[in-house]
Every structure is written in structure tokens, then in C-alpha cells.
Amino acid sequence: MQVGYIIASNEVMLLHKPIGFFYREEPGNEQDSGWRFFSGDETEVYMEEPKNFAMYNATTIIAIDPSIVEYLEHEYPVAFERDEASGKFIEVGFSFK
Image (cartoon, rainbow, N blue to C red; front, top):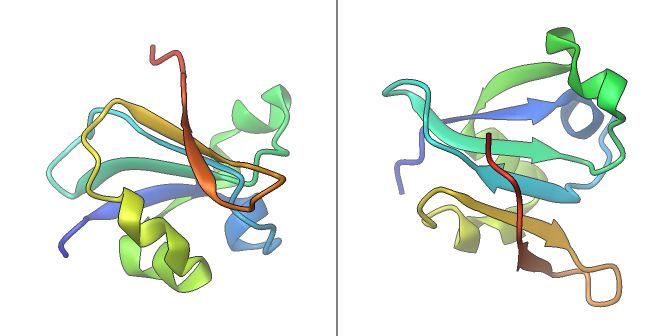
């Protein structure tokens, strides 16, 4: 599967918090998949700081949580969050700007 690059928060990638929320928006360029990954604990102030995010190859995020693979072929716009009771990701409504 060729996904392209994703953007993930440092909470997930550097602090190793589990993925709690992710969404796909229209990609910004040919290499961008449009996928964005978060722990779900990021504050609004954190989200406004570009240095808190980086672009990664999709295989990097898959290595962190292989359960996301089944969602990566969804077309944009779409969003998922982890259900605390089951631990599985469920599709949720999300306001795309």
C-alpha cells in the first residue's frame, strides 16, 4: 500500500503517547497523504505551534500502531478516535476547515 507522508504530533512520535485521534483532509501536495495523527491530549495552544508536528513516512506511524492500517485507505474527509472502552477506532464527525 502506497500511502505517502503523514503529519503527526510530537506527543505521539517523541513522547510515545498512544494514537487517540486521527483524520484525513485534502492532501497539500503529491507526497502528502492528508493524514494527521494525534494523542488526543494536545491543547489548543500546543496545536497552534508548528514545531510540535513533523512529517513522517506512513510506515513509521504504522510501526507505532499497526491497527491503523485498515483505516488508511479511507478517502478524505474522515476522522477517527479511539473508543476508550474497546480500544478500537471509531469514525467520528469532525469539522474540516
